[in-house]
Length: 377
Image 1 (cartoon, rainbow, N blue to C red):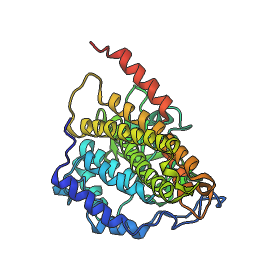
Image 2 (cartoon, one colour):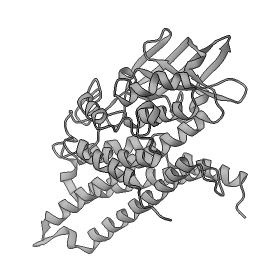
Image 3 (cartoon, helix red, strand yellow):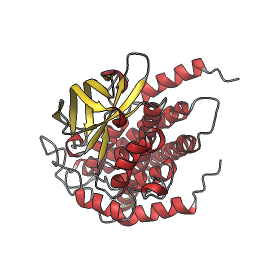
């Protein structure tokens, strides 16, 4: 496979590195020392810098003020964001915007997308359902009533819902079809209950009680929610990759300086072998990520639907990022648990990413179902 990135994609990476270069992973209180959320809001100054660098409009079409790039470019930027634990809803806003662009009405796209690109409108999505284990679209019912829709149900673990302007809510119609509703956060019938993520960020349980929204705010095109779910999962894999790469670099730096018996511990075979195993994990995470992102970007056909490639990527991302941070903690010794050192923050974020959009076991089960339904000849 040719994983050479285009000039536009490489330019996006350079812009992202410039924006994220000034971000410190420890700019908020430690999640290990904070009983509630580490902050009330996401990093608004960073969000403004992302907008000013045109990174929020990166994946929007030119008619909406964007650069017209694809999911591969988004994943490249997310990879850089994770290296510094950037506290912004970049994945959620960009993914929902792309779904609106691909599956929404022209009216909805014109209303939302230009404002997203300028950083004026923040989007998030309820992708965890009621429990985090069942399909998200089954947690909310959607009933069409003339020119409007009625929504009832609960979505849990919605990232930064209290700060978002619109919440994308998947729902089922009762006829085996999923729709995606873009609900204003302060809409009548919407109730938010505070939750705290493993990484210490402010999440919410979003309860919808007879929420009535207009038809143009609902994406009912076939496959819209499924495509968004695959994109969110693939973006989560990009976050896992970037985080894992930074953690392995931190481990290399530490073991290269830490001496025992007069030698850097990095020269000990047991240390080198463990680090090498984690490097192999990262390379597997990378190749499966780009396969999934490329399938999403091009719509190319394969032996399995694109969800199969996404499942493989998430299996590697979930298991791989867990192994990377666990090995890093081990090789750092007691220093890795020091709350004045950022490694414990990466460990908390890694656990959040590992379980987001389903752990490895859930995707292994989904992949098994796909293989049963699509026998490979």
